[in-house]
Image 1 (spheres, rainbow, N blue to C red):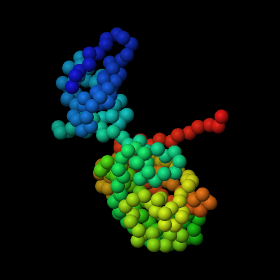
Image 2 (image 1 turned 90 degrees about the vertical axis):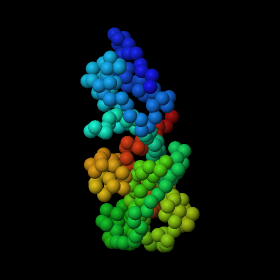
Image 3 (image 1 turned 90 degrees about the horizontal axis):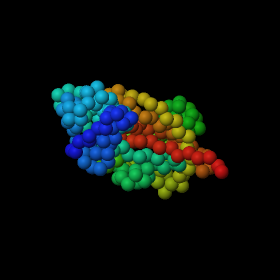
Image 4 (image 1 turned 180 degrees about the vertical axis):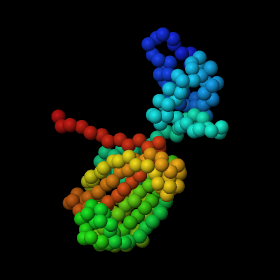
Length: 248
């Protein structure tokens, strides 16, 4: 790794220069995802800064998702895997969103069952209390790494035989192809949460890791609710984007 010579007295703080240098090194491929940076003492000495200044730069890069820092003898600062751009604009399923990001989406089914709708599910799907719903829970992966945990509910009377289908692909495409009930509009709510031990195990993170929850009710073009979902995303692996505008 080619070290930067920091400019002194030029108006740009040393920690900012270090941030820019490391970001440029990552962008150029000089240091790659998974690479470990030199130890703090050695790196600070080579750059001619205090460890406090270096830590300020590393903390800023960690907050931006460019680095992952782990404690202990085997720890250190590692270049993070690049985050997947997940565009929430419009109504597209996970498979389509990953396709837009030029990644291959995969799904591992955790649960696929029919049961009585919990109260919040029945209300969202505009069903009678305890009406039958199909529940499908899946771990979604992009590029071979788990990035999201999906839990979706569908009105069983509208979708007979849904659980007999291949549930490893796009469920939205399945709804359109077999039932003619393509989701065309949705209401989504985003909330920060922390991973439970069970969720952490599936997403391969530590319990208590921050996650982003998206609660969604999807409807057909005619306004019929066909899905109520609670998706959990790893913000260290996924960057959520919403595009907005105003009429001219």
